[in-house]
Amino acid sequence: MVDGLTIVYTGKGKGKTTAALGLALRALGYGKKICMIQFIKGSWHYGEMDSSKKLEPDFEMIAVGKGFVGIVDDKSPREDHEEVAKEAIKISNEKIQSQKFDIVILDEINYAVNLGLIDVEDVVNLINGKPDSVDLVLTGNHAKDKVVQMADLVTEMKEIKHPFQKGIKAKRGIDF
Image (cartoon, rainbow, N blue to C red; front, side, top):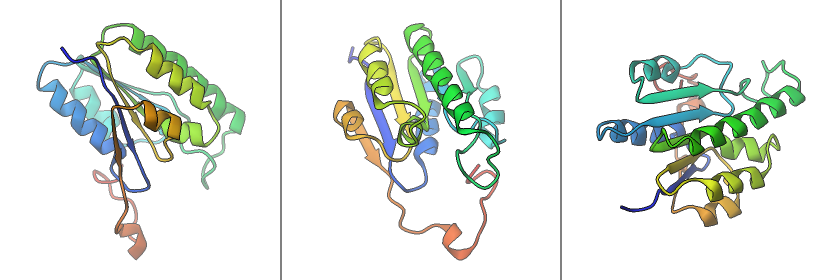
């Protein structure tokens, strides 16, 4: 058996979380158990919050974040974002170490590092400490070089064209 991989989906293009969810859907077809911990998106409602419930008990999703940091409707103090990001690291480590999951997805963790909510060393410790049986998926823009070097697979999403450029707002089922 091949040891668990560390997979990174990063880049400015859309599709990082979607790629991780696609991987999870494929793995569920093989009887794998998946846990997805969301570092940023927690306060918004989006489709995977509902669809993930249909995949229980083999898929567990935990939304820890307080929403996107520093955008127009973000009313949470930065300290609150930092506190929940640190809690997400703790939960991530617990889920990784539990041996209950074949795949653990840390959604938007790279973005949390880039925003300074957590330190890249927190991510390095999660990668270094994971059991060999666990595949670890890290999503989010701005993956740090150290994380990229440690990963077994890195895919960078590159935006070529986006509906936002035409003034088309986010679409339910496509963007959230």
